[in-house]
Image (tube, rainbow, N blue to C red; front, side, top):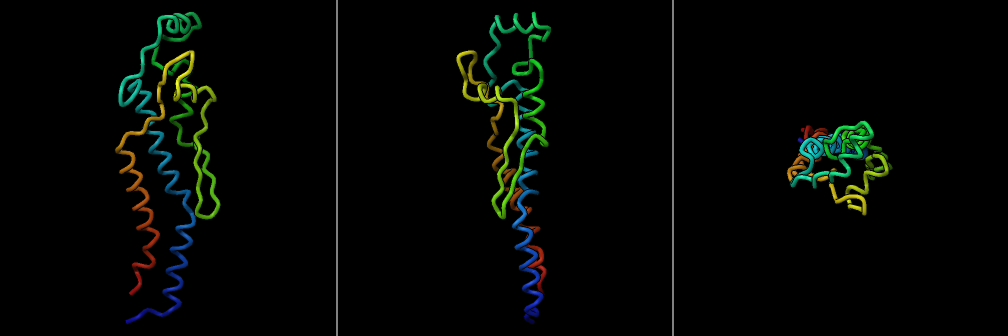
Length: 152
């Protein structure tokens, strides 16, 4: 039996509406990125350990009242921002969704290295994240197509 055209149209419109709202899976992905970034800070570098702090840096931190470690966590401002899922600005227009992580400006220097310090990639994402993103998007699309799949 072929379903009534209005049932088919409604199912496709529901699916179209769902797929035009990508913020939900992007927020889930941002959450996953935040967890990965926290793992980087906790391990002080992944997949390899960040270069140790220079003795002069440790002395300066100590003189300023900060501890000698952990690396990249002098005030905690960068770590707090980089690992907070709410620090992601997510904007959308139709099916286009853009996500940007808001961190202190100096955070970018650690990603590329600079004259005052080596590269310490706090934003590293492990290869498993690709699989997680695939799963998040696959699950979201499966839910989006439920109205169509439910047709008799």
